[in-house]
Image 1 (cartoon, rainbow, N blue to C red):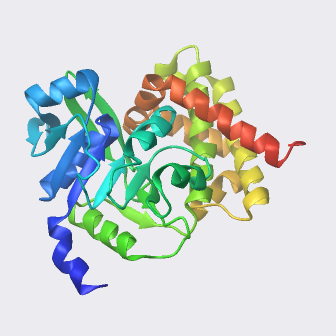
Image 2 (image 1 turned 60 degrees about the vertical axis):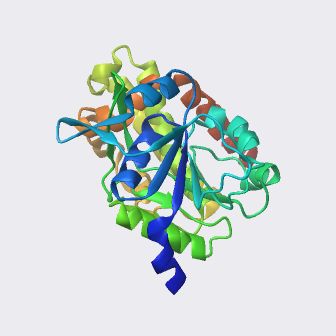
Amino acid sequence: MRENLKQEYKNMRLLIYGAGVIGSIYAALFAKAGYDTSVYARGKRLKVLKTKGLLYLENKKIKKADVSVCSELLDNDIYDFIFLTVRENQLYQALEELKMNQSRCIVTMVNSIDDYSKWEKICGKEKILPAFPGAGGSINGDVLDGALTPWLIQPTTFAEISGMKSERTEALSMIFKKANIPYQEVKDMHIWQLCHLALVVPIADAYYEASNPKKIWTERKIMYKTARQLKKNFHFLKRDCGKLSPKKMNIFRFVPLSILVIVLKFIFNSKFGNKFMYRHSMKAPDEMRQLHKKFYDYVQKRKPEW
């Protein structure tokens, strides 16, 4: 690892572009780790952050993150990393707003399977570093109630588009490590995101189809339908991509349907399911339905007979 990175990473300037649940979690953690952290926000959330600050729950106590709040980004306002934490249906508007900024790295923590070259055409070649957050929760009464997902389930994931390690992936690793954020660097972020959508789209669909989403695990037909769709999705991706990422996703291909249903019931009826699955699905139905369409459009184009 280069010595200049070891000496300079503590002084890096970080911008969180998007002040929802995900952006707020990372902003609070980066600030707590001592990074010069700014948050770009709009509308009601901007007003709240300007008047009250970024409030978050920690050990059942309300704390305030030491962050700067801004509503505009000048072209020459340069950050070491810009973390783009918006919903997929807000992605292209955000990229258009960021394209003139002279910062050299935009970490796109967005749920999308679009071709990364489309993003580079907007912002410039080699400015995009694809990633995905490992966090979830909600904002209640202007206070963030969020958490990181356990490392074994889903750490914060990132990779260069090329799949090669680089100086900036080394720097990003150091940032996450100092902020105590579980992370992993993968070889192919596009395959990883395809696998992620193959998982979360059927889960969100299940909530939307259920007669009682809060007790979805009690609806037998929904559980079996979701399990079958998960198996179908991952069998397709294995044939289409040649591999799954992470490898543990192969469990959906091999576990018997009846066992998978039991596991799904347990997860849907857990605190994890409530915080990381139910809350997001119910608060972002437009985004999830758009992702549903994009994923299954991708499937049909790749395998029309599937």
